[in-house]
Length: 248
Image (cartoon, rainbow, N blue to C red):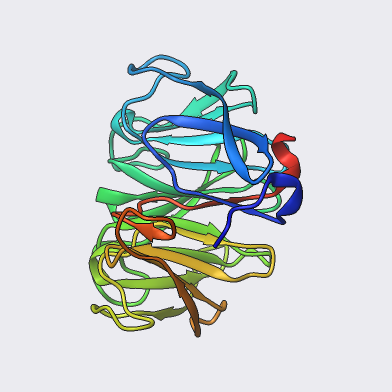
């Protein structure tokens, strides 16, 4: 599939890396524009940044896993605020991973080793949390990715249970789908998850592919095979869907 420039695409798919990068329009390819961050524990410094999301005001939120915090920056990389320390209390994290932002700015974080999802306002004030270790509905075995659809439903990739779980914005269980395997609708350690403007749900896993579902978990299609050529993937860990107008 040929990647088009920002002005030609409704949304652009980014595979997240360990360095926070922003790109500008460059015709039919994405051209590097600028970057920010360096190793450390200070403001706008990172220790294993693993998740990234952008809100409707173009603020950039980075899950700083090694520092057990979330950092909020503006679109130019200027530090705004951060929250989180190491622990299992409200607002604390142990190796946080994915992040999802609701249209109203509410932030959801997958708290990997605490086996829960935490919900915050846009500036990091704690709202609620849900989840414990396990395999029953609403339980997790290392939640990795979080995404939110247009009506506020929250989707979580349950890495160790090889499934996706769906909740309302207060953590009430709605449905789940997936089992271990490589067939359509199955997963091998699902990681990142994203929802587009049409509420299609994208999930990456260790089968080196991205699967697309509707909001009830019905399989739609698959992108990618294992390899290094165009359209192929190796160990895809992150997905971010953003509107093209944000950085033009």
